[in-house]
Image 1 (cartoon, helix red, strand yellow):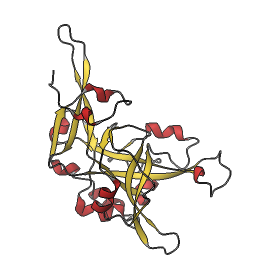
Image 2 (cartoon, one colour; image 1 turned 60 degrees about the horizontal axis):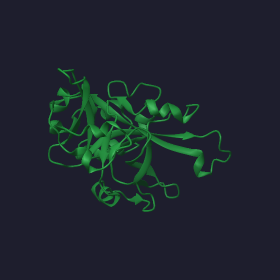
Image 3 (spheres, one colour; image 1 turned 30 degrees about the horizontal axis):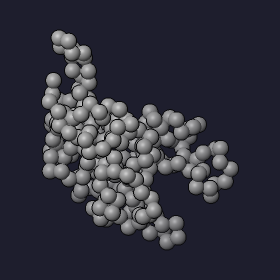
Length: 245
């Protein structure tokens, strides 16, 4: 799975990198070295303009943890931070979003934990690792997004009535990531961004063909501070390398 990641790039930089045509400068997220479930995260998606109908690429803040439109409350989202690539096209919670509400979730890299057995006086523990593209480029994680209508809000046109949320698609871990954890987020190659984001592209076989090369197999991994284990901790010091014990 992917339960934490790092996202520190400025929205201006993301807008340029992903050729975004719509972004609200007043919508700002602080850089985070410890993105956790239910946090607001940057997402790149495409939707038709309400007036012209023209397709526009947007940079938006979404809540991490997908809440299906039929959910009774938003609490279910905390359990839907990941969708398995093997079944994402058929699971009731994800199949509609997979068909036409796909997004990219930009990140610097992600964390996974490896169990370290007890040794002598040292207790058993979990060692966090930071896994990221070897060349330092952005990791465009494959995602889905969905809208949920809050029944407690009376009017549809009230912004509080709607929640936009997202999930990260995961796959079998490859390369060095597979030595740490059996699953990892699936990255979309830059040449496939347009096809993945296009809501008119709905052929499930063709879409699944885009989900085959996580991070192109070029990943770096290093043991980092156990401070990341606490979601309240944040800052670049979380990426400080530490000796593996």
